[in-house]
Amino acid sequence: MKKIIALLVTLALVISLGGCGTVTTPSSSAPSSNTPSSSKKITIGTSPYPAWYVWYIAKEENLFQKYGLNVELVYFPVYSDSLQAFNTGKLDLLNIAACDMIAPYNQGVKFKAVMINDNSNGADGLVANTKFKSISDLKGQNVVTEYGTIEHFFLLKALESAGMKESDIKYTNMTVNDSGTAMLAGKVGAACVWEPSLSLALGSKDNHLLYSSANTPGLIPDLLIASDELIKTDRKDVTNLTNVYLDALEFYNQNPVKAVADMAKQADVSVDVMKQMMAGSKLFSVKDNLAAMTVKQDNYTYLPYTLNDTAKFLASVKMIDKIPSNPADMLDPSFMQEISKTRKDFTPPDTKALAQK
Image 1 (spheres, one colour):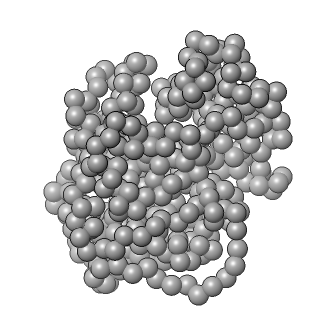
Image 2 (cartoon, one colour):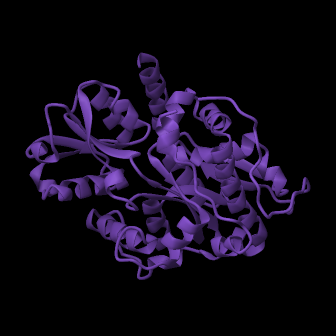
């Protein structure tokens, strides 16, 4: 346990700046080629969030070459740096939390979300000292998280589940990374944090989980966005890139030991820690993508609904000046629709079950 905590501490600090078997290759309908379909190098921004490490399965297993893609994965230890890079045209695609699409969209950055990587399914949580047995016990207590972020929104939803509002607690603004470290050190009583800060905070026997994103399915989606320029000039490459990610998920299904090792290598953590980090992500299939993007529902299973509700929160805390009139305009489901015609769908890896092996 001490070794795992030490590894998590190391990873958190960086952010603030089974069995063996035969390795098999996932099947798909895409052609195999060693010649890039485009002479242009395609850059994809990634950062330390579990589901985005799936791209490093693709890198380690040479899945980009299968489609003739010339790809550079640009890793940003500080997530906000990746947002700045994409918004200023330095990246072709970016892995992004859905909530962080809204401000640049309002500001005129031209992009579309072409794929949902995952929904947080336990990768975000409200952690408290064990003396607080329920969310209701936090009335009048100091609770920390980062103002205006998805964790702040998540905190409000957690409080709402207990019939409470922000005014019922003593809210204190603290970065998510600092919140996790403060919880581990016993300096605060409760905090809303995401992985790996969540596992970091739960590394103390004095802390426990009161509420997690598993209680709010669809509230916290993570997406792949592509610049309008790339979509316009290299549409086939965008389609192939989404296929690469799906191939990586199939490889994860068929070769979980090797896949987790591929991801752990980039994250610079042990395989066991990587398994636990991934356990909080519900990975998305083609069918899952299409349902979330196109099947209208008045709940968080429908991505435009989630974006609209998130935009209302961001406007309420003055992080954006207007709510987009049609959040669906940020999405382009046509790539998944095209892929669904030729690719057999599959069940994504069960990350919670794999974490127990």
